[in-house]
Amino acid sequence: MSASQTISAAFALGGLAGHNAHGAGFLQAALETKLQPAMISCTSGQIRWVHRYLEVLQAREQGDENADLHPLFEQELASLNKTGEINTDVALLGMFGKENVFRPSYGRVLSDFMRNAGESLMRFPRPGGLLAQRLLSMLPGRSLVPDASPAYYAQVAQVLGASPIGIAFNAYSPCEGIEYVYLNAAARVLLADPASPDKYAPEHPTQRHPRRVYRDISAAGVRDALWLYQYGFYDPEQQCVDGVYFRNIMLAELVAADTIFVVRPVHHRWQGELPRNYPGVEDLKTRVGMNGAYAGERDQITLINKLLARNCLDVQGGRGYHHVELVELEIGLQRGYFDYMLESREVFEQARSMALAHFRDRADLPLAGPPGRANVTSCHRTLS
Image (cartoon, rainbow, N blue to C red; front, top):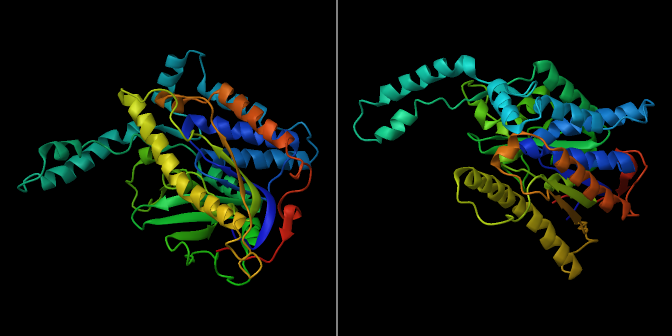
């Protein structure tokens, strides 16, 4: 791909409910090997883990050399596995939610139903239309409400925004058909293009991606990037959803890197027989959708790499294309639909071990240097 400047390593972390342990384990391995990337892109629940990762880095810089993600992950497990019996724990999660993440919308079920019923009955006298659809339209579209406080969103935004590591995350506006990508100042420095200074300017769609708008990181942006479908859309000011539904792995913002570690919470293929039950089919739908969204950007990078290998691109004429290595670390366990509800120590440790094996075999990675600009080699290249 072409880039304004090249950096040695970047992380692309994809979130997915109970599979967020995969990204957390990867970040723990990065801490253990002291690999600090120049940029990180993250979606959905990985925003929370990147926030924790950056706080651990800050603690280490302040002298706490033992700070890492292990105790934070154990706290996460303890908050979900309250009894140690999976059926009871899932039931408790369904009844009471997850602290600082979501809770059931018990207090709003009746008002949501009455509102939907009123709107449905207004349409009922009209001829035509499917009766079943009208009756089903009375059911509320909101089953959960976010439990995080405004102070939490602000604190996450402050840590991500101030980080010397470039940060990118996303949200999607269905009504506008626009993906909003939030960047911190370090990311804007790394992505700066002298030939097109407005390319990543706030609220400025790019020529290459007219349906993508870049914004500065804010508390409202963090809230939008964590807004689940299950929260519904009863607030007219809430126009965005979690960006993982649209682009679960963000690669385009990381193409300045020579190496991108792609930490995927799903595998590129279905393991075992195709499902013949409802939960299995729902799981398959999630995986196919995420793999399809990822394939487009992955194939673009692969194509440029092939054209470079065949000397079909001008690498010196101002375009500055360079080879980008994608190191894909996909979850290795076949976990089912209901496994999305609880995190797993096995997933965390498997991702950690997988990442450690990759990191320790790579002598070219910055294994003790400072983050951000210290890992940048200026090449005066232009992002296309």
